[in-house]
Image (cartoon, rainbow, N blue to C red; front, side, top):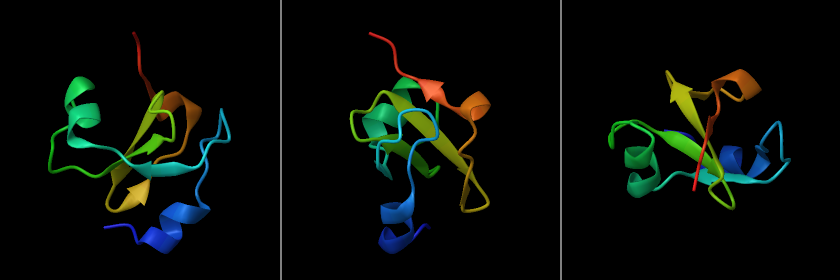
Length: 67
């Protein structure tokens, strides 16, 4: 699990918004299992998965919220 100190340093590569842990509802809406860690932008418009406890902060890997 990512530490709160590490998460506080991370930013979205596109919007530059700070990141936070994604909620279960956000993960579910994008087909990410509830037990998988993911990060979301402050406004929830983008979600990034983690792989082996490492965030994948590539624009090509983001899940953009719609609606």
